Length: 234
Image (cartoon, rainbow, N blue to C red; front, side, top):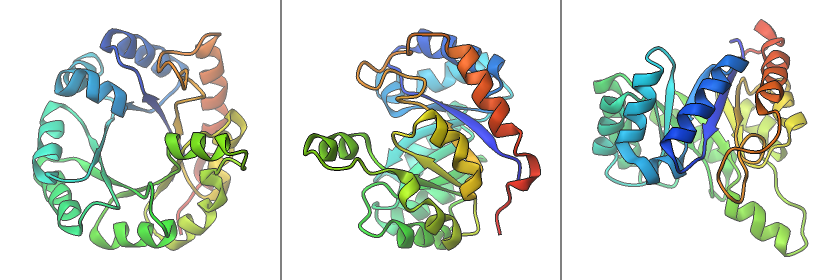
């Protein structure tokens, strides 16, 4: 498949999220993500406003669902989300409920392996249950906590190839990637490239980063899209 660039709108204000989304789409971004901070701040209304503003663009609702899977997925799909996120550490029945709601309401399901002791096995289990995509994810708190102890900060690239090789559905890598690392993700076989904190969002303040963000995003999108059809799953 061709690579896809997704921007994570990890913001807490819908007006800033809409402005950032419009800029990102001008720069060549393919998918929008209603990040968890935005969902907490604005809820369904934030997703609805994104859908109203961008009627034809895929929207990922990063719910990080752990329970109540059917209702959460149903509500976000009805609000306009095309993709919802469920956690691998949720009970398998919750994952099945999210998948059922996704099927009923036309939303794809992304399974997130954040916090799993065996992230490769978790990816396999998510695919076996029926998830359409795998999110290979090293968390914000985990990265900062380990770094604060003077240890090397973990990266999703550490096991990305193993995760990609373990499943047949598309994979995206999330969690503290540098600009250069994000651009390299398709070379690992992960065609869904997520841009967010700290690339495009201030990781501490959760607001749009300073600087010429649009020009930077355009350059990133051009480099990622240039991989073309060489990016394929097995």
